Image (tube, rainbow, N blue to C red; front, side, top):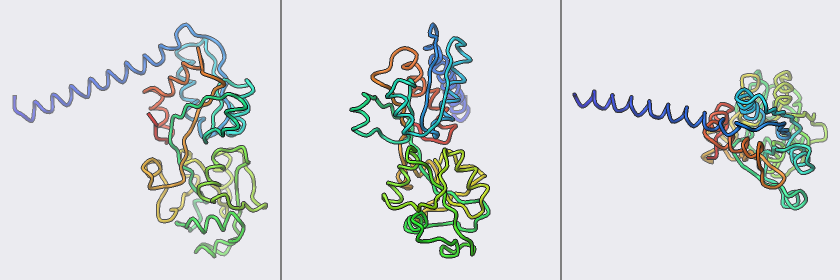
Length: 279
């Protein structure tokens, strides 16, 4: 057999083995739910929802005796619900504080890297901002788009409530814990932020990079266009990890679900949602 044909055959064989291994791993992941039953309540960070929903759908299709419910509310809600036993898994877009761990006995399971990007309306002509300009805009020091090479129009600010992990990362890493103007409109989730800014041609806000789509535009920040690859390699600095948190070490159905997210099938959901898997 010619060398090129042999290499091609070997490559096809290797690809087939990889596909079989992937399919086997996927099946093995769902096999962990055989014999399990009950309800699994998940609450907290909104950035996590696409991953949680995809995983929950696969689990419930594989085992109808399992019901997974997913609620949002932000990272603060995730901590509270898990800590008070109102949810089996509390999702956060930030690391737990020492106080939260001590108060509730929570255990964290990081599973993905995400970035937080400034977003404007797609019709906004501003294609780039500096970190200082963003700080000044959210502090109310810059109140008109013309001051950052945009149209002569008043800037409308959108932010998240203090329970939001997305807000905390944005506030700490980009705003450097600076002021947010009292006139800023507060929205409840990444999805709500996209809707608000997408409908307001003068609006500015911020979302998880995993939530970026055509409804909003992410200007370059200090010359770097935000995307997950740049977030994962450090080129884009406004980043965070996504966590699942439980009260004590998980067992049974809860452990099976967390292991599923951390396994090869969970990795596929994480990538599909626009995030970078940690494992």
